[in-house]
Image 1 (tube, rainbow, N blue to C red):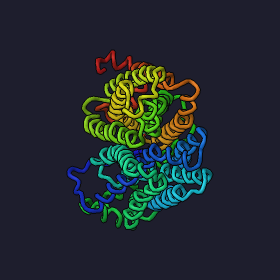
Image 2: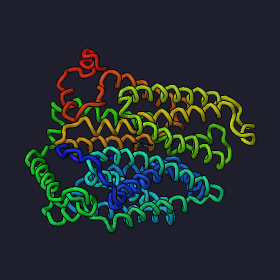
Image 3: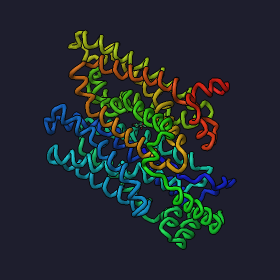
Image 4: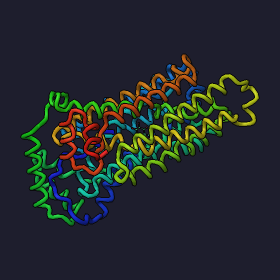
Length: 486
Ligand code: BGC
């Protein structure tokens, strides 16, 4: 999720932006990109059972099939910035949609696991590219006042995508149609292609490559209510400043930026190693272990307890993140997440030690139901805290000039950590057991709590410039406490 907002904050917020059809279509682009991303995250959970049966895949192969999407996405996210600058935002998004469709077809028609894995990598690459290019395109097109809203819409769209994938899985699970589940992900990609085709590139990109006339035409189309010439002049001025002050990679890793960089990377890592994607990808398997014996029961639990709750709680966070502040949301979420994870660990302890031979036909045991409730608490707690807030903070803690590169680093670290967790989750379960695996995620949540409490300052209600002043203190959190602002 390289939802980097553009580096321009100099443009005054225009008062009441008029939302015409073309601007709505920009919103549709970001929604489609989020849906496509989320669908692909969620769909694998229902498809794994059928894949395992069709190909007799080993645990290692199942983990590769699941997790290599994130490897593809890691590479895609890293090259997306270069592609978006060279080819333009529009062509890059079209390319991502084509790649994604191609990958989905490869997956659906795969004669064996090798082609399936290649399909997963291609799809992941498309997701990675779209996850950077689409929010960038939308942020560059949106009036300043709507920019934040567009970025949160993206997070919401991801959770809706996961939910839709679970619904599709549930509808198709009876006939074990894993090929259709994976193939259907071509639909949002084709829709993204269709919506993107008639759209102009962003005025900012046209200015960047010296196509002023096209920039004016694009601006007139998307936002007919603004004075195009004046706006383009602003963009040109900002682009010149950006060029003159071009940040280097050395600067991103310089001592001056060490504090925000460590915070960005730390948040990106903790968002993943506390287990979210292990649960999203392997939900059906977890519910199977918890005594939900039929694939239908597992799919229903996954759809509503994980998918539905995720959308709902994200909705709440997106609405309230500016009222409650980042720290309280993060810390409260981690309390919920760690107690839920420890509860899941304890109930697995009981389930693993109990004689579960009779549990199947009658449905889940009490411990299984407790697991279900605890997972609902975990997902809800993640979705109002680490899910959206980590991205909000990552996007606001860096100075304008280095933001693009620094956010790319944090995003790549996030995909890398997601890969680690999804690649080794089942191996962990096989080697240390269900309980210990969830205790481990629980322990990471406790460490995350202590680390955030000690090192992550509050950024709510501060301008981007004020946030930069925070890093001048040796211990920003203590300084905020001393000043009585925490
Ligand atoms: C995370 C994803 C996760 C999603 C779940 C996002 O904030 O970055 O890895 O799958 O939330 O809703």
